[in-house]
Amino acid sequence: MADVTTAPIRRIAHLDMDAFYASVELLRYPQLKGLPVVIGGSRRRVDEALRNLPEGGTLADIPVETFPLLKDYVGRGVITTATYPARQFGVGSAMGMMKAAKLCPQALVLPVDFDEYRRYSRQFKQIITEIAPVMEDRGVDEVYIDFTEVPGGQREGGRVLARLIQKSIFEATGLSCSIGVAPNKLLAKLASEFDKPNGISIVFESDLQTRIWPLPCRKVNGIGPKADEKLQRHEIRTIGELASRERDWLIATFGKATGGWMHEVAWGRDDRPVVTESEPISMSRETTFDRDLHATRDRAELGAIFTHLCEKLAEDLQRKGYVGKTIGIKLRYDDFKIATRDQTIDRFTADGKEIRHTAGQCLKRVPLARSLRLLGVRVGALVKADSADARAGTASVMSGQRALRAEEPAARTASLF
Image 1: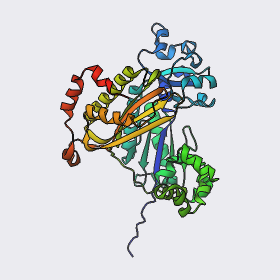
Image 2 (image 1 turned 180 degrees about the horizontal axis):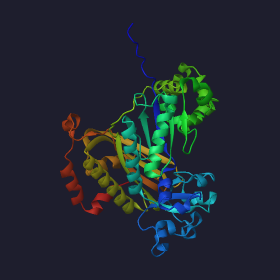
Image 3 (image 1 turned 30 degrees about the vertical axis):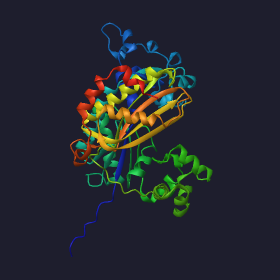
Image 4 (image 1 turned 45 degrees about the vertical axis):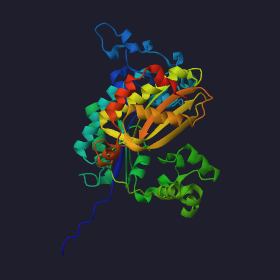
């Protein structure tokens, strides 16, 4: 009788580095381990702490008491990340630093160093692909990995391979990570949060009711605050309560696409593959102002900032070889509410002048009575500049850029707002 080979069970891992930015900084400043530390406020230029570097000493020799305290911070910066001791006080990423100072005034402050974080990101991802080559990059500090066909990927549900990857990353970088392994990406991402930091969590299909259904709906990537609020109005708070609703009811309440998707995720279904190469769908540039700016009172200053964002975004697109045709803007008002608008044009472009013109049209569709904290510009529906779609109708990039730079500043800002 011929041997029957059983196909391996699908095992997908989600790996999330633990407090990544903060952990990288603690490699630089080990004397801060165990202390509440926030990263944010500004990008690293001249580190204030270096002024207190003892002669002949290293960064590890800088006295803890010489680092700046969060309670003394003045500005509009936001926290990029925080160490776990700081998180215990309710401090978290994207929180305003002055607001965080009220929760944890004793926290120490370090500036952001994206170059260093990207260097460590490349390092830990290279380690992963040497062990398990099918990896999907999801950002600077997280990835999906297909364990299914990798040696050790089936042992103990994937725990053996997860432990090897975790150990290899720590030995090479000194950084810890948490890994969830499950039948698909949806469940793996949820599992990676179960045992942070430095944890490994294994989830099988049979664990859906006991481990997944008790979780709040908000834990599902894709269910945001507004959707969660609407779910709670219908007395749906957990994933299990979501699963108890009929598919037709969800579609009638949330629409065909969203309602159908909610039904699938509540039952743990997700057939998305691990994609080793992906194209960006959009690029953006935005800036938070040092002080609130008003569309009338600060028109010239806002105009100059707006033009600069469009120029830099055009340069990003050209450098990376993309063009797009959906152009949009993002505003954050002084009450922290956000407004976005976009417009799709009839041809692909990476032309700064055209981006600015179309984004300016979007600005006419938002209220501008309140002062602004943030202004951003985005280009979406991207394709490669040398693709057939792009060649069919792309605007002239270089000539447009030259024309934009040749305009007088006053003329370039006059039409804003």
